[in-house]
Length: 118
Length: 114
Image (cartoon, rainbow over all chains, first blue to last red; front, side, top):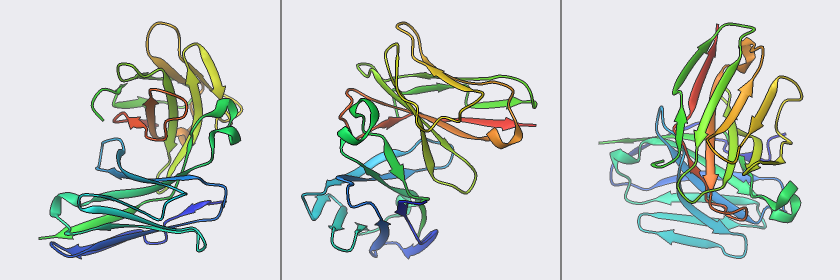
């Protein structure tokens, strides 16, 4: 029962071009979405997030778009750089009241491995 | 990842042995999450703890797994009588509060069961 889906296991992009990573979800109760980046042998690092009350959030080269009606979000990286090569995870969170102790546990996609070629 | 310390980085155990994984949160963080990543899978929530309390253990296997976060010292994830299927990367993530969506992760412990 994969509530957060990243259907592309891998993506290859040329340096300087745009990278678009996609994520679909099934639970309309999710109210917060996050993107994490992970290098081999390291833990995930927070990249950018978006609340369900917004449809776009931008931070430098990274922009996340949320389409609630389609239950879809995407991460745009422009321009892509070789150092962006990593695995990108999409994660979603239910409102705290849905979880024991009002916590913000995350539900993760399987990740997309991005390779940015020089 | 700086600040959340996990050790050991790599742990090798034979079937039937015990595994103890440690997590020291970032300074000022008193909320700890443990996640497991099996090969070719995404991260799966295991347990959420605050100091001295297990708040949400809905992702923990019913047997052999336990977690604690004592008043002093690191959080411990303990796996008794390990089996090959326990081989995975175990990540600890911490936050300053229970409502924080943004988590800070350690580098993980790679558990290999022979």
